Figure 1: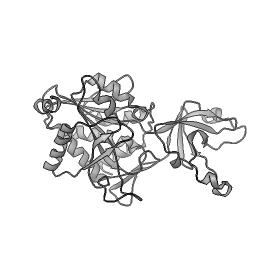
Figure 2: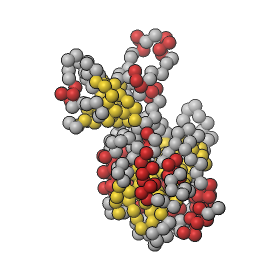
Figure 3: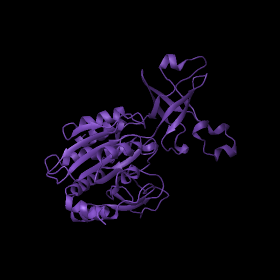
Length: 357
């Protein structure tokens, strides 16, 4: 493994559903400690400040630390676990999947129970079971008290049981939590790329919390930093899988995704033009896309203070909001390269041109 693969392995294997980001934050902080002055807000978002030639403009480059997961809602008398979603899950992807319940005694392995097809009625086969009707089995038997024996309690967090894997195509990586630990890794590597390089601004490399439940950490981060410009790094939705059109631009190998629209923000078109110009100058591949549903940290950030020109960029990723996602290494490297090159251009004159009307 090279250093980037080690970073991606550690940060995606770390546990950290919304509201429980401690492990992931610790990994990101360890990689950032020699790259920036570290701080945090009171919700737990990690903030790394790297001053360049000037205190301003203040450039925010942010990924979110949390992954989608679950929380223990109820333990039945028989020892089965009912659970709440933390973030947006399509229930179709859950049945039969392994999970880890994170208790004070340590992780407990379980499986989301499913009925075998032999006993399902025809109508039930066509339905998508709702999360409130699901349960987790940790090896429960009658009169087996999983709170006493295993330490499982109401309020414990739950994550997919899935480990970072380099696939047979050694530039393809499989893992949970690429949404959005991949972008936290991008933040780290952007700071690393600029460690010994001059830049005419101050960079704030950030890992926000609770994005998947309403971009809550982004509110407090924006208030604390008061950025002049923001690059929100998240995932792009790779569409190069059946039954989609393989000619669509959002695919593995197409470079970073740059959004023209997303559900919580119309990204700043002047900033987008600067990014596209930079990509073309440096021969960095990219794709232009939109995401009309959902939202990102860009929602609260671009509305903070007097307004913050913001953009959404992402590494194309297959199968987000599921137990396993897939990325292509060159897309990751090109995202880091493009953001670093853009940051080097964001001096006061350039930012003023973006801000002023």
